[in-house]
Length: 339
Image 1 (cartoon, rainbow, N blue to C red):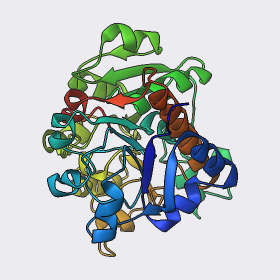
Image 2: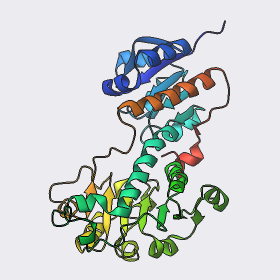
Image 3: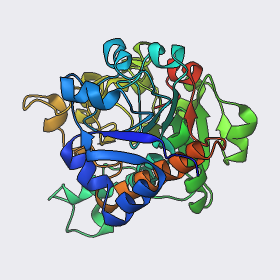
């Protein structure tokens, strides 16, 4: 009988408690050997180094410190890092791949609630529901009295997706529920055939902007994507269009968006902001045409169990030397496709 690999869980206490109920912890112990306690949120003490010395796999999540060269040097037997959350950009670096360590992420599983939130936001945007609910002058007057909000409809609308990430792809597929919707995608890395299979059409960003009633952002956060949607792009959107951001706040120029929304021309539903949280004097906090939620689109509550199950499945595949389904390579990490 083959010896079980030794694992160490690297995450903060709240993450450990959210990920591992008794049934999932029991499944984990069937797959790997664990210390007691089985988790840690720091890797720099002598005790942590002694645990790293015989760890073959790290199971990481929120609260895990970055795997720096010094920390990796303390883990000479490390073969795999399985991440129980989404992006690994702040966790791993080129040193990980130079050592031949394999990396996986639960980003596919985390994409599910984000895409669901985005679909709900798109549907609410079509009816301008959040903004009408906040407008005491019109909220209680009946639909016939509503003015200044454009066409309150989710039929024969055009939705633009900036970025055909794993979330953008799911959103495109979910939008099939809205009959008559045209979905356009702007992404320089996307394959037109893959976009078409998801029910959308690939176009340039400049061509997309004037056509859409809703613009939803799903690009990775990179130096070159900062303010990808800036003043010039916002000006190209039609009157009464709604901007949705469930990706990263830095992708949109906050001041330019606030100005367009304050003018009454555009609307926005933002689950992420730049900075996050917004300071009290941010213009975005003063505009009635903006709805902000506290970064809740990703996995929370029982949804976190989906991430754990995903990683436990990957762990089982890794331990039995089967192909991994969510492996992150150095190449797709470098261009932000691991987010």
